[in-house]
Length: 461
Image (cartoon, rainbow, N blue to C red; front, top):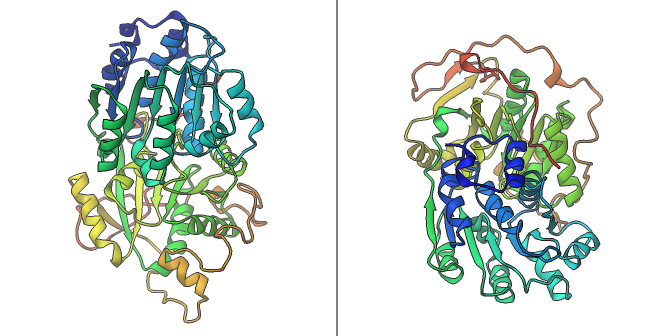
């Protein structure tokens, strides 16, 4: 079935073609007709299932008719990166329309956002904190609001936005269409559904079969050798787009700095960075100037980068859902990817839970030539001990404020080790056993002759 099935306005359909969409995803197929008909919708779907277009296309269709110069649709998202991603989707899909969109979030100047609210931009994509601040200052006229979208509601709760969301709902017109999307349904989300939606159509999309596009590997290692092993893996892969996840903001910053000192083109993206520097790091990663992006789970919300070859869990995630979200950043658009997790003995319980979620045992691996017997240093400062344990520093200053370097900048003077010739590696996959298989790191190989595309990202207006 094609998008012609939805009988979209020809200008909206032009945006669909510009985005390169050919066939609707399951959530688009189920949600678009209901949203177009004016129904409230509860969408339960993981990142990467096409949910942004599932609400953006019907909203654009609706806003083609009626007055302009009024804010008629509001999309609330938990992070700046996701807000920008949604904004880009509206710009791409609405490129042939007269519908305007703008973002509102913290970490950047208020004046452009105030101007967007004053002139009645038709679609506002906002993070709740900054939006409430501006509304309390008297900016923004939502009397004509027709559609409210709460995206990634479960992560808004994880970030403590529930009080802000409830305050926002009280300030908005009660007569509106409401759409709520969430990957999971904890009790807080269920309560919000009851408070916000009226007789909603529930659209639930099954979890995508990650195993068909992503190969999973565990690398058992002592905590003090994690950084050395990651460096060795990056050299073996010689990959140009690797996303690394850490548990805390401090670890993301420090790990990126350590990788830079070792000659890798690395940057970090985490909550202590200004929005300008977060966006710069993400842009550098997208255009290939940064090869290794180190991120926390929260900061990574909204990262939508094509052709990520490897996702590395430097720290094992806290939940099975977080693992699924992380590895969903690779193996997209029929390209294969590798999900690599560095594990210590303390991670055994969570690994068992992740394997139950996947329905299979993850293959254990070891890197040929890497010395796993190096003892932990006898003398280690308190900050280094905290880093290896995965906790934040206790320095009296906010994490990430000391010795900060511009994201994507400050390259090491030596040659970039990620640019050297790929070392010979064998990819002998044996049956999964209790002991690690002695093999080279998973490379950037692609089975079945499917080549890598060099272009990335959606076209923008």
